[in-house]
Image 1: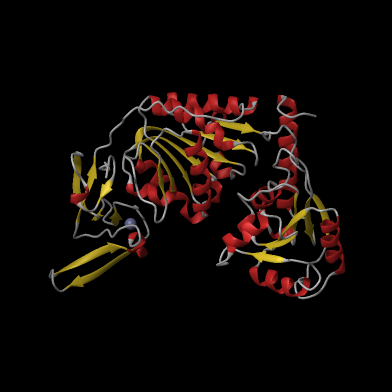
Image 2: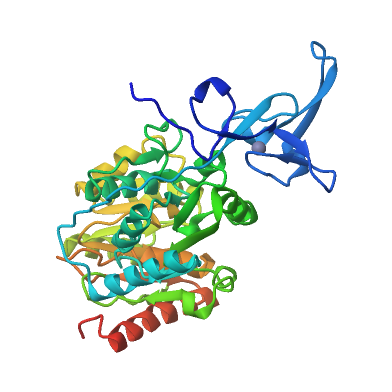
Length: 433
Ligand SMILES: [Zn+2]
């Protein structure tokens, strides 16, 4: 077996190290200057995350971080080791089956510029713009300089998907793919990981791409920024990518460092949502809705129907399953969700009831979306849901229907945002009229 090196990392067991340089030895939980407990791994500022008890065998009080129990216990008793980072160049040749679009090239150039100038950048890219490929030239540039690179996402499914695409393109590179249950195989110079895995790295990365940054739970916001900063060297470049940046996120960038990417890679405009009044009653058969589903089946489209509550979805399923062949529902706590999504992709279910679990990531040809009670969704969720439609080269349009009982500001904003992106795309010449 090849020996793995732990550069720029927090290590709990000294025997995991060989010739790495240890920069710091300290306890996993310390009292900071303000007199508060601080976990060296996750840096949680939450008082409730720290638990103190009296240890009989040690004859002393011990405080540990509850937040880190899964990741590796941090406490006031045991030493932890932080190692020096190290850089190593690689060729980072990559292979693509297609040419980058004009827009992707523009984005790539900006990514390289941000890495060269050590700045942070926001790629505000519509769903289906081809974000992953926009990173490739930047990754190559960075790796050729010897920079340590990480691509992170809040969601395991995104990490799995994106790491497969990156590994396919950079087939000769040693890429560490880290998420729960997947451990380091190489020396951590090129990492694709969930954000939690970043806790283990300290002062290591020169370039971090943060994908789907708006999908992080809001409560994690401050901790997320801290985590990214602690894992980075002080001159690092951070590149955020999202289709729905919040105002707060946008306010953190210089205007010149917000790169708007309004076009899909296939050069067709985004499907614009339509509104229709329907007061949804989960426990009643609504003929208007049933007709809508039947029409969708007749024209041979696949339809995702979005519900805001699992209970309402299950109730409606009981009613419509009698009338709709192969009706299925899926939600985030569904043990069979992976199998169901696979069956979906195979085209076995023309109508699918879903919660926001399929709001991101999922896509297939001939797909339409219907949102029930649209007035209860955020702008970002509505934009992401609309973004499922028309993604494939062979099927670039489709139905985005927001059912509602009173149009909300969020609905208006979602529609305005989508239309604005289409306008900018046309002006830039990145869309075919
Ligand atoms: Zn912790």
